[in-house]
Image 1 (spheres, rainbow, N blue to C red):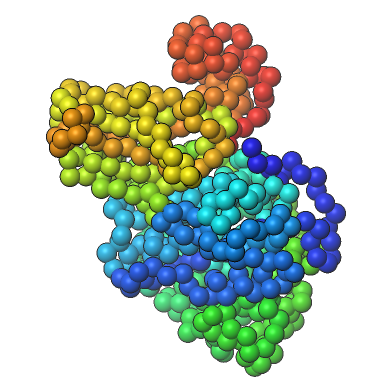
Image 2: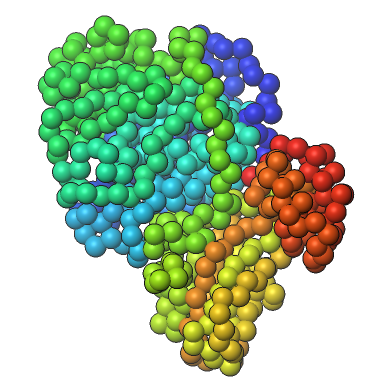
Length: 516
């Protein structure tokens, strides 16, 4: 189990170089693909290179969505400062200028990306396989445009797991939720983007934004943190054609303090250096200066402690919210099944022509014990089965015999649990559901799937939500003296199969412990 940042003693703040290594995450925003293969914006890599250059041991790694791997130099050392560029280009523009590559609505794909990033931080693979990106390190996450919405989801998951984000930076945050200008998005778009917030596990949060009267130059917004308004009339002189992009160029200029430097797309000239970074925007007192590598930690304004993140789902979007496949597409997941939406709600349908679906990488905590799902069989077939399996980072596949559900008769919705006891916890996994034929012939059944959820075996967690609190006492009392198979029913906080006073004792003895 990796060491949580929250368990590491807080080190004395240093006005110079950081006393322990750092992990920096850079997240781009809405990136138009125009129907072309998705390519990371060059500025994000340029920013990563500039940050790495500020460290005597900085290394850059780029996330590869098809595999979920980090690609970069081999054999990083524990004391290296790691800079990560997270790629979610494929789903970031909602298919505005081309057919959206993912079935379903555009709803919540920022959350899906943030969930995949969390799994890649907790259990990295590729050239960072086995490397602890979080334990004993300061974490700095920064994002542009829709990027802060991605990072908000990651920060919530980290917070629930007791992990600290030392520094969160937003650059012109623009959540697509119909609250800001949307000219380039062709009218009203509500994609469910989260407005980034400072949760209790985020030590310091700064935000650099601007606004204008041009509805086609996407506005940023204040977030109620250290909000720094960049002057639009200054940003209009030089840099990008849209000031929305000038915000990450401005931040780049607080990382690399030189002249005639490029972020990979635009150049910071002497005239820009003389006008963009003046007064309270001087590069020596703001922006990257506040970071651990920047050396200005003691200059950070004091910020109040934020609220506690809500308990998240271990397996995101198991109910196919809004007919969307966020969490199931873009980060190694995918398949041929489709989301259906009828009077009974949204669900996943597997048919002979669309017989499989794989969830993106998700992180299985130490107390994850079972997968629960509901299914129904509109079209039975005597030889067909619904197969449930998981794949780990090494490519090893575990198929569950208990998850091979017969589809020889039709009925209403039925719940089933698949025991995950044979799967090692504290690792990232892919979850797959497949329609198969016992005789290796063609399939003929149709099966609908909904409400997939990872149940926890956290002692004291009577309602299996991953946190021991007053709700567990309530659940135990509501199910008093019920009997189940051990660990399978609500109220059974000590997992012995009977709901009684021992369950109240188990909850009180593990009060406020969490599982993630």
